[in-house]
Length: 428
Image 1 (cartoon, rainbow, N blue to C red):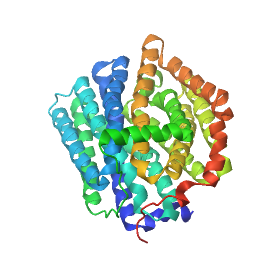
Image 2 (cartoon, rainbow, N blue to C red):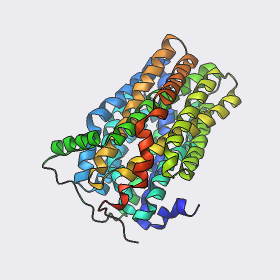
Image 3 (cartoon, helix red, strand yellow):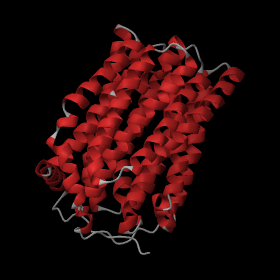
């Protein structure tokens, strides 16, 4: 257990990690309220999918470029600049909301802008945090970083749901309720920016490419040569599009199937978050090279099976238990993919490779959300969830388990490049 948290012994990683926990806690409230606001203000399942596409476009267009910048420039300064831009956009949404003028299209436009900023923030963060610890603490750093989103999902959406429910009942305005939640997120991001200012980033080997476009081309060539990265990123793609994107249906399930309000929706996110934390601990205990294929497969099967079970449930409390199991499986896959990427990627390509992973993580999900929203509009939310669960199981049992690349993980991790790369590490 001590080894699992050993990265926190490093001051700079600790400052980064605490700040990121605070920022993501606020963002979890923001992400929860976005879906509720769009559906509450418009009543349209299709607009939930449109919101996903609006966030996908800048992510696809800009994330690889953001990764190239992260390999070339000071990642800490990039991160601070992106937090300031986040604050500007979230602050504008908060003001519009508190004055009662928020519409579904305001939320969608804000999501577009935040996604564009995130295309630069995500790769810079993924490239920076491994340099804040010594080499032997890298698995701990990756695990702790991967734990933040699921751990904050336990309580933050619940708090956000309770706050928005209270404000909504007091003001009889979804706009005002959203404005309050956006204001809370602004404060959280500001704290993160202040803590990043105190982080010391050690000297890091930068990309020596002639220009950003050449760096981007070099990264794509590197991934094509190292087929294991294609396999890992492809697995993330499929499970994000057909599994994790299920969460876009939560507002519909909450209101139309389970009969609960924003507070109940918050508990649904919380149940998923608790399961995700369990998944992180399971993945953290299965770090041996010969366990990686089984970890990926069992996580994906769990996610697919319980997506289907959730779709068939009409009892709220049973649904929370099913979402716990679903979150566990989704987190196992996510942590396994991210850990193997960070352990195997060469340092000079880290920002760009993790940028591509971030692009998949953030941009493919909206594609899946549009698919789910479209099926929900044509049929129903439960039918959409069943289709997604079946797709995950077909990929997992039909390809992932038999893949030669999955089998190669054992050999690659056993001879991990971590010991061979000339990595810059923080002083002890």
